[in-house]
Length: 259
Image 1 (cartoon, rainbow, N blue to C red):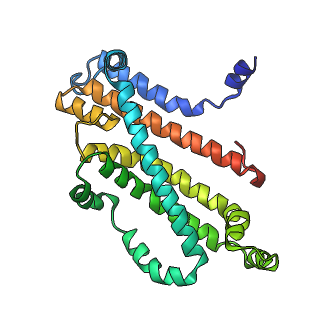
Image 2: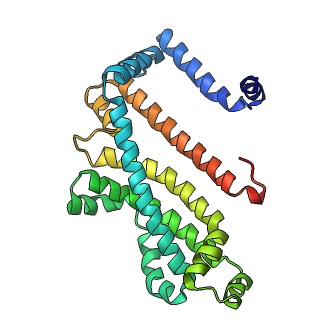
Image 3: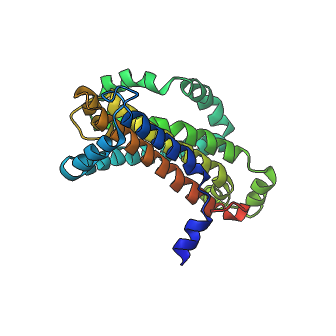
């Protein structure tokens, strides 16, 4: 009953546009108003998807992309939180490191690829470093702003209670900066996924991955496989965004946000 109740009460207006696009896609290909070798019918995408999932290396490709994504996200986020806290707490460090950090953050992420590939080649290490960079900047910036935004009165309370530096970080600074840190992590999760696919496109190797799946489709002029790969990439990204939003809302429920 609860499932039926949830389905009835869910706002389905967001599904109207995808349903309309799917109907239009089916109609124009069924009526052959377009070149169906370029704009393939949806049923052919379904057939290729079934074949790829049941007899191809679909699960291996998804697992490889997710492993790269989460590895780079974890490394970049941890480094971003650490640097953001240090910069937020120490004016001296901010004066030394801040100008360099602010300069480097303006370099396009993709401009790092030639240097990364020169250092590490085009294997997994290079891809994970590229993904970590994409996660690092939003987390570092948001953590810094969160720490720097802590009211001075709260810091003075910590001094009155003679908190050690570790106690100040764990009992005051991290909890107070949590909303901004979570915002940075949410952005980083999205950027990391886009960087994962970008790395698999641009640092081409024989390693499996969803980006590699799309590349194989392009090489074989298999438009069905390209469309299927793009749909899976979009669905995984939407899933990440949904999960991050749910976790953020749950952890910040004290602010009155709804999960």
